[in-house]
Length: 258
Image 1 (tube, rainbow, N blue to C red):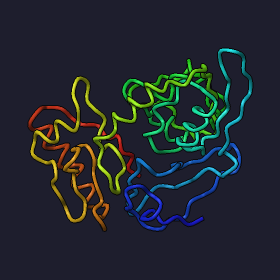
Image 2 (cartoon, one colour; image 1 turned 30 degrees about the vertical axis):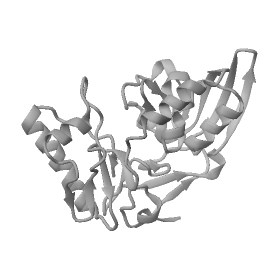
Image 3 (cartoon, helix red, strand yellow; image 1 turned 90 degrees about the horizontal axis):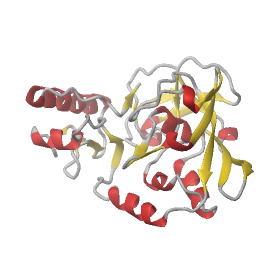
Image 4 (cartoon, rainbow, N blue to C red; image 1 turned 180 degrees about the horizontal axis):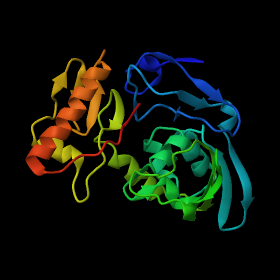
């Protein structure tokens, strides 16, 4: 299928490219996209694939009075997972209301918010190389070491949806800017915040073409209208360079560039 990434990606940057649909568990040499929410697509991306709609599902495998055992397809988006957990009084997915993306992408970056992360209730992942148990995956902050395609994952969630946590996590993201964006540019370095560092070197609100480092939160890059890949890369590398020169901290991308 053909995907126009200027329309499909959350940053609204990119051209039209052929994308292979994976309709079964199989090997794939390339990059699997989900919702393209934390993605910047170059003019010459590597081989791109996307999961078929058959991997958009939530299935109850088992449950008792305390827990429920779910299998979730990696095409399933975060809002669907959040709604399912709320409707079924499950605890553990409250933070997903404010994190866009599909399960595959969430697992690939160990997405989370305020100490919560997608790997915390994970049991195993079905990959092109077989099923891999959570205890055999060395997740870290915004990091998953597995470099193979994901197709579905299983979770064990306790009951009792946490409405207090739900509201607190929603409020935690109220400072994030609106507009076309891929979310955070950089991971937060240990003991500090990328946004604070970028603001401290004077780049908050700085523009190149139609790409702008947000004037609301400096770790966000906004496409004001027709930003190019080159505009975005210029700002990313400028911020990294300025922060390193000023603070000796090398910022690491959270956005994925292909």
